[in-house]
Image 1 (tube, rainbow, N blue to C red):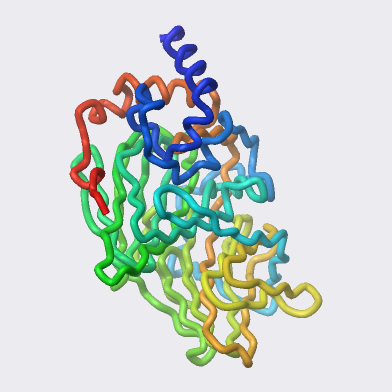
Image 2 (image 1 turned 60 degrees about the horizontal axis):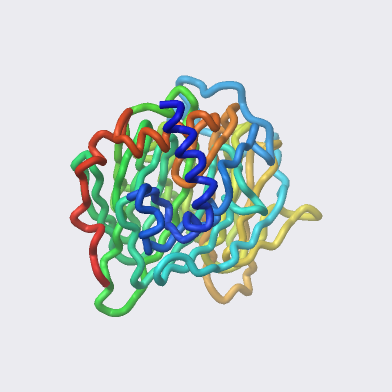
Length: 380
């Protein structure tokens, strides 16, 4: 096995330029040179495994509490003693071509912001004719929030389903999964648009059994704030007395979708010590107030400092359209991150072992040997 791992390592080095042409998958790794599937995650494949000792922007917590979500009796509230979080940095997500017809805005997983523990990548994608055929994952969770279009998914464990606008899918890769995510072609020529967030798994859960949890748009509770000028979809976590339906991810994460009408102001409480950011999907917002206020435009990702327990968002009364802001917070993990494409482990040895496991169909990838999805060969 040691010899085989050395061979795999050599292949990785020799084929780095070919890996750049791949999406996120190592599908048919031995036939790498024959593949013509474009890489949807080229930034993650274009260099050797990268190690991040700890979260680059803020210190990591020592451990995940057993009951990591506040209960309804422990609602986080905004009081006169609350302190606002300051803005650490703002990253504008530049649109780039990826794959066969996809356009992606990536604000986590780039040189400007490689990791923001526990978050590994955030993609705002739009595609009219690009699908994501069979590909593997290990060691992380992915959260897909579909904004427009329809997406089918299927994996080697027999799971399958369809996401519609407003639906979310929480996929835990754990010890290994191979799946396909294929948008349906829109009869009106419209695009498939959504967000995909990659979340690191705690070391003790890296090799857990894979699982899926879907959340339908109709299941998501809402909070109304500022006399109806703000609507919050509480996907995960809490907002203004409203709790999400259920815990959907192993790593503690809050997901809140804000719609702010002109002249709106909202102050959102967040768990202390968690990392948090706000991605502007549409419109313009002001983050904070007074001398520390920052303007954020469409496609800006606002990263907050850890100190403080609330953030404030507002819009100008003269705004000509609503602003939509996706606020995400999560508990940082005190562990190294070694990532190569869709494989996210805690050491380079584990990454090399994952290559070997995937190639030999062992230790979680047994079902990949003879499995091919029914949707992966879909032609647009």
